[in-house]
Image (tube, rainbow, N blue to C red; front, side):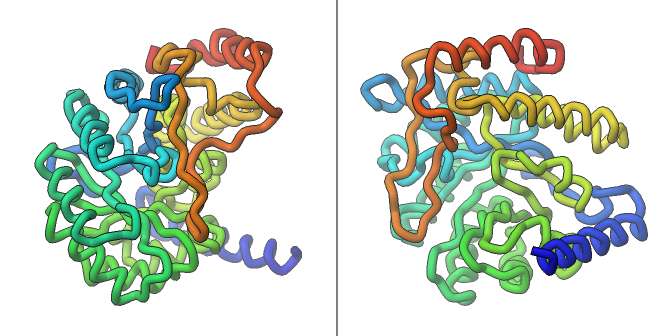
Amino acid sequence: MTGNRRKFLQHTGAALGLLAVNGGGALAAASAIKSPNGKPLAGVFPIGWTPCRADNSFDVDAMVKQQQFLNRGKVAGMAWPQNASGWQSLTQAEWHAGAEALASVKGDTALMLGVQTIGFNTAASQAYARKAKSLNADAIISLTPPGASNSEVVAYFKALSDASGLPIMVQAVGDISVDSLVALAEAVPAVVAVKDETDEEPLERVTRLLQKSGGKLTDFSGMGGMTFFAELELGFLGTMPYTGMADLLQVCFNSYRANRKQAAYDTFGRFLAFNSLPHANQYVMKARGVFAEDAIMRVNPPVPGQPAGGSRRRGGEITEAHKAQIRLALSTYLKSYLVAT
């Protein structure tokens, strides 16, 4: 425990030293590129839900409402479908219907489409990548193929780049190293960002990722955004939480970028307070009027070696009392801070 803590503090000190030398805070560690549509690939990019009706049939209208919600909230971007979207449960027809629904909604929120397929079939993923390009998406994202060698990972992402011509975010999972990610970005110039969810603590390796890539790669986090402020201090340029409070996290990000760090810290505290409520992420999109009360969210089927999608549930099954507590928090403590009204 002591060794791990000492190692973390060493990495943190190095990261903060890098920022101090370069000046400009976290922005100096890496600079966000813009999509072909001129939208910055930085800030809050929540992983979109896959809302379904009570019979588990895919609800395209709810997908549109989700994107409109993020547009109203002035959220930087959205990624779909990834683990929290239950991507492994989607049929090809559902993927196309969801992607087309999201692309049909005009707004400033960038669209990043997930293109990995069951078994990480390269040809099938390329077909999704070509579809993303045809829909005028801003970027694509894919998990790293499980168990693949470095050369196989490079070949896979090069195929995605060739098919789409779009910027690529790598969702790094498993044991892929910093050196492997840097080599991937050098081999495939379209790879510009990483959602770091590997076995190694992302907060402990961000400095190496930024330094070794020379700022070529920007670093995003997952984990529901729960450590976002600490990540900003270390040079992360974005986070990929759930959608329900993405507008609040975007306010935090914007304040931090404007060097109003105290305001950013206070906003982040409100985000954490809300997420301390049982079932907060499970119910907030319903409480905010985006999804119907009987909507259900797709989750990934259990697959050995792959992280499960969906929100972590605490407090047993959700009750009317839980719902009332969530609605109360939104109306009493957060109303004046929420953008997507």
